[in-house]
Length: 323
Ligand code: SF4
Image (cartoon, rainbow, N blue to C red; front, side, top):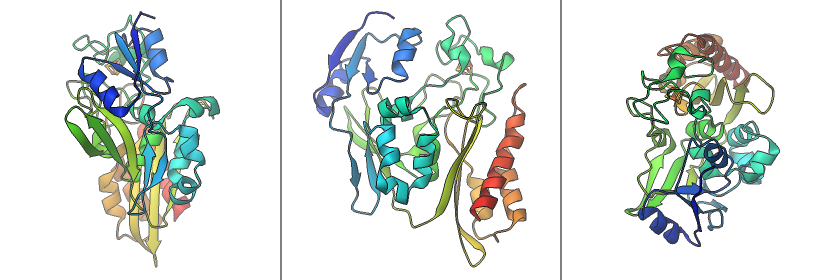
């Protein structure tokens, strides 16, 4: 690991001010950052420790939603009674996301900002446009079983590894930011970027901006779940995962949300499939058609065509179970 300057920020304004002086890495739980620094994938000259900022609360919002502080631990969020009762899909995603030890360290903000686990990204001997723009992408012709089938580009086919973000996408969460130019909010579905020609730009965060919280809008009681398919039953990232919400009245679907993980560089909302379902009868034909629509634009790589059928079946099965 290279030498770096370490500064502990005592307040949000100080953290923003430090970041305004030049590039920094923000340290919260450190569960991904330390790996990246140890492997020298990231070589920050300054690390600003934000772990003691007052951003760890989970607060009720006046509209009936919840605000998750950026430093709330994944374990804390998953165990919160309000999350378990009102947003069980999020609790399930978090519990599927990592070991208990990691959940006790990892934070909401860190989960949002974690980097891909593409093996070529971590291998300094490999060509990787995300790590070294313009270098090429060894995953395109290499082992790409775990890579993207949706929204990828010739520059990068990596996937975002988060489970939490998939549930947040299904729930229409909002990410709150603060920075040198003030505060702003971004829908979670717009927060992460597809790779295009600039895979090194992964989010809409501007220089010096900090994630302060994530807002969950109020939701009426709705059936929902998070399912994850992976190579091992635990301690593994998703090959494909799905956060699905479904509600029906008198046999007609009134609410449908489908977000996929493990398939793209961001949590992938299947908007067209949701439109097909909304107003449709709760039957297997509708579920089949929606599942097919959800993967209609998929483009497989050499080793991951199985993900298309896996995603289709996962969506269909989950809709049947929720109906
Ligand atoms: Fe790098 Fe993306 Fe290619 Fe992986 S898929 S090697 S992260 S450019």
